[in-house]
Length: 230
Image 1 (cartoon, rainbow, N blue to C red):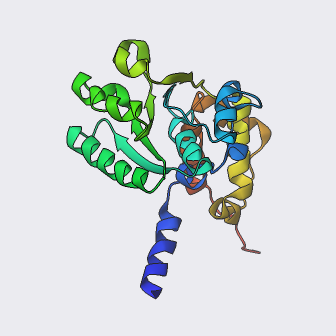
Image 2: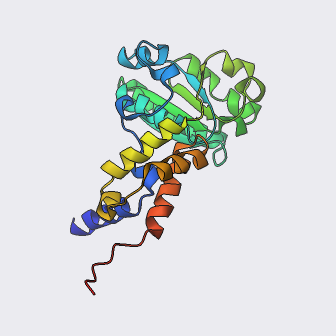
């Protein structure tokens, strides 16, 4: 047991900052107010537990994966994560088989497919019957225009949400949250002035994961304050 706890602590210690700072609820999520603001369709669906299949289209680092996980947590659904780069039809079938087992127990499943545009027509077609009969709620994430990259049959069964690049103000908020809430960063007691904070946000170019990666690199390079009296 001690070894397991030690292993978990080490895992936490070496998790990248962007992963440690991944929001767990809509309240912590920064940006995308046009789709998850008060009274928006997606927000109401989450609050009312009336889930639907969807595709998130937007640049890297805008919260596509994070939002999918938040939705799963909010509606108490199982979350299966597939990468279209690494997965094939066999993986889809295994995921569906697992979802069917959960469905028999009255439990929901979200099947999340990252970079869904990488799946070919037959791979995309494999989802259709199970999206239609409610075995899974499908959430796809893509950086490419779904109208050009996804089958019409799949598109007709999902709602597309466009995620926008985060603003400089959004990214500044992301960095500020990390500096004040991440235990490892707090131990460093970093002093970042307003102009440096803004520059960091501008360089990240709308990418929350990117700005946290930059911050982590900067924190690794930061020199600890000298305690020498002489």
